[in-house]
Amino acid sequence: MSNSMFPQMDSLHLDVLKEISSIGTGNAISSLSKITNKRISMEVPKVMFLEFKDVHKSIGDPEDMVAGILVSLSGDISGMVMFILNVHTARSLINYFYEKPTATNEFDELDRSALEEMGNILISSYISALGTLINKRIIPSVPTVALDMAAAILSVPAIEFSKVADGVMHIETVFSAGADQMSGYFLLVPELESFNVIMKALGAF
Amino acid sequence: MNIKNMIIVGMADLNAVRDPGVLTTLGLGSCVGIALYDPIAKVAGLAHCMLPDSKQIQNNSVEAKFVDTGIIKLLGLMQKLGANRRLIKAKVAGGAQMFAHNATNESMRIGDRNVAATLQILGGLGIMVIAKDTGDTYGRTVELYAENGAFIIKTIGHGNKSI
Image 1 (tube, each protein chain N blue to C red):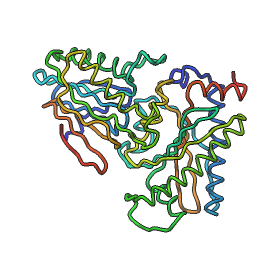
Image 2 (image 1 turned 90 degrees about the horizontal axis):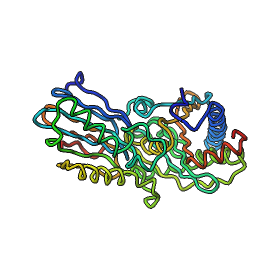
Image 3 (image 1 turned 135 degrees about the vertical axis):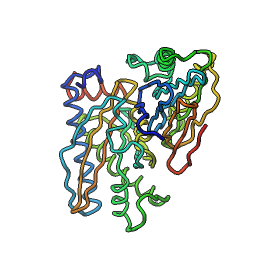
Image 4 (image 1 turned 180 degrees about the vertical axis):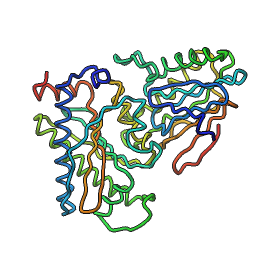
């Protein structure tokens, strides 16, 4: 299935990518648990491969507003990591910083910086797990947040993927704190050469 | 809006219809939506392209992924439906920069490059661009009506319009 979409990869590469994504995500959720001082449980991440023309079906309604937090990577690995979350989850995460029981579709400047900070913590933990695993130095940029239609947000990592593949790989992570069910997607998009660096470091070449 | 006649064009995808068909693409971000229309045959075509130039990418078998090959393929499809190439005019939307930072980073400016490539290639083919709504920082859903060539653009928080 995946080979036609990711011609450079065989099933071993995909397994490796799944594994590092799971480890990164686990680390991010554990950081979230620490800063919120709440017990956060996480389901096993679901890894999905989608052809571009099906991407718009992948994360609910393509026109629904979502929050995307984007970090670009430099150092030994170049590429980007994006964390995408629905409006409800974004609001829950912001509420861990400061309680603000307002309408869920309005995000002001303070909300955005809270999201940026939250994204920074989550993505940094994700990247640090990845860096440790492959023993490489990865430098994350300052995160930026965009709130817009899901498909439009997804176009940014999808275009990065499109340079090397005919589809997108994303990892859905469902996590919850008590009754508050939250979910988000991590997308790790290494540039082609960095992908090779990761695979070599893990002995997959 | 007649949902029954509406065909969704996904990412790296394209399609063409005759009147009374409607083509839509949902949530264009940095990708570019290229709408072509022959007002006499009433044939409409819409492409949702991700990258400007197929020649710069090794993995280029999906024609609709690229502006250059996507436009050519779309023109062929429309001609099969009876469109006259010389009557076709274009409208262009999308090519936003969704994330504000790193405007100097080449891959972050992909929206601008997609739009520039679209205008250049259409110009080279002698196809006039009669309207565009491109750039800026927000996503757009577009609908193209084969009945009259209307190109409707919808956004979250930036209004809706017909170009």
